[in-house]
Structures are given as structure tokens and as C-alpha cells.
Length: 141
Image 1 (cartoon, rainbow, N blue to C red):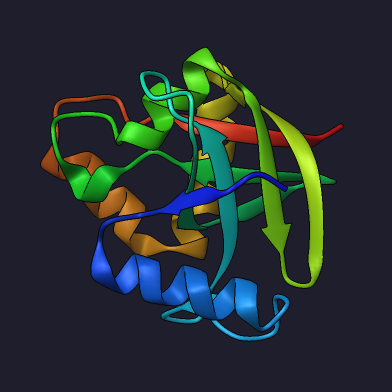
Image 2 (cartoon, helix red, strand yellow):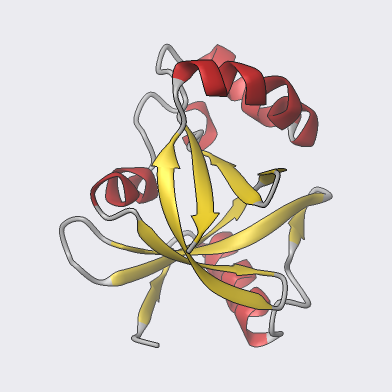
């Protein structure tokens, strides 16, 4: 695997290292919510980057929320996967490639109650911003 640049946010970097170095045994939750490692190609640098994200499930797919803590701008990882949708995931001990796609408004409406039950913060963040927070489906390839 090529070298990966870990998030510059200190707590994210610490959790990402713990998650990866433990083989997906440690660092797999935040506040009781399951987390995955998302490796993606930066849209400007072309380098691989890694972040930790909470997720939900929809059948076999993993579903993530581009909330950026309710800020008015999309997170950088979301901008990158919109241009380069092939990503690499670690979910627990398993590593695999996936294709990322933003769900439609109708699909988001169906998923949102479930996602809000996984992590109430996502609903709170949507109230904080006028931006429509994207929901992303990660489908194993």
C-alpha cells in the first residue's frame, strides 16, 4: 500500500494510528458509535489521505455523513471523494476497496432517521447550517 497522509487534526490522527496499528481492534468507536478508516486520494495533491469517520449501515453498504461538525463548508475528504470516488476502507480488522457516491435527496430522507439514531450529533449539525449535509454510500468493489 502506498504511503498515507493522516489527518492533521490531533485526536483524529491519534485514533487513526491506534486503529491501524492494532489491526482494527482498538479505536473502532467514538462515543459508542462505530468508526471506520477512510483512505482517499486528495483532489489537489493526488496523495492518499486517511481520516476516521463514524458510520451507519444500509444492507452491505457503509454510510457516512459529510457533516464537518455543522460548519458551512463540506469537509475536505468529501470534496476529494466527489472527484475520486474509489476509496480504501478499514472496518475493524477488514480492509477493502469501495466506491463512494453521494445519495440522492430521496434516499437521504429515507436514511436520515436511522443515521440520526446512530449519532444524534448529525441531526444537530444539520440544524446548525444552511448547507444540506451530504450522505455518502460506500459500496464494496
